[in-house]
Image (cartoon, rainbow, N blue to C red; front, side):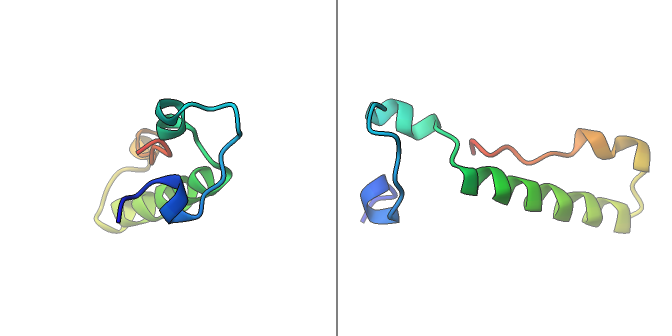
Length: 63
């Protein structure tokens, strides 16, 4: 089993090539990245990190 669109039940716009599908950002990926960013920033602050560095901590929806 591979992590392709068919096996993951993901729908892409029909005009995208397989290579373009690999870098296409779905709304789900963007939302998940926002949640991951929030969690990472919270953990950073709990570990004693400085609030001035929070803007440098972001999750990338393309990964």
